[in-house]
Length: 330
Image (cartoon, rainbow, N blue to C red; front, side, top):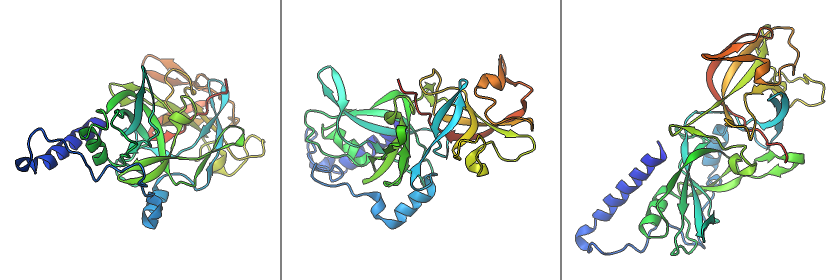
């Protein structure tokens, strides 16, 4: 369901509830209270306090428990670092981000974002269309932990109507104790986000590292780049140390893969979520020989043509993988 459809639903629900008492109230009466809007001193309970809900989230987030390491692949002829955040759908879901006006500028309202889907929900996707929600002068740090609270906040004059932006971000909902490995072995914690009256946690890589998670739209839909996963013609598995349980390049770890991305963080057209292309190379291919799309393909008017050698054949698997690339240090 798109963000626009969500907002239409909010309005319909709100009007139906308000009109149930229309006979008893004047048309000019203003609602002054909502049980869905929390006062600033009221905690929003963590979803993980429910053991069943925590287990459902853990089973469906697509991430191994603990620290998600930085891995190495290739883009543009050089080695890049990326996080493997698992498979994903190619659809987008909304995220409402709260802002406030400060003169002619807009700043963070210090209120967690709001989402309406998490792993285990049918429509969950980490690809999030951003809606900005500005608080008004009446806002006294109330909390809006659900879609109903958001709608009531607008009706109460605490919030302005949400504004849809023209780009997506990449926010993976996971367990509170999971971590991302950052540059220089730092650890990045997930941040709080509200979901249906509860607090959950997410790695919002679009905010973490420059443009590592932001990507463009085309006609209002997300656009995806290509990730070429190489495998030798005599082998069933891709050239990925984590899958093969082997050190393929002799650097004393098993974090490398000969995945080739068609762009890197900061490049025009970079996406962070990729179409998964299976590329079969000859059995003499050496790990790391191809470091960019130009080592594998020629761009033709009708698409990509494999360069032989090393490419024997390739196909679009129809799958999508979430692998944000760490931007290079300035």
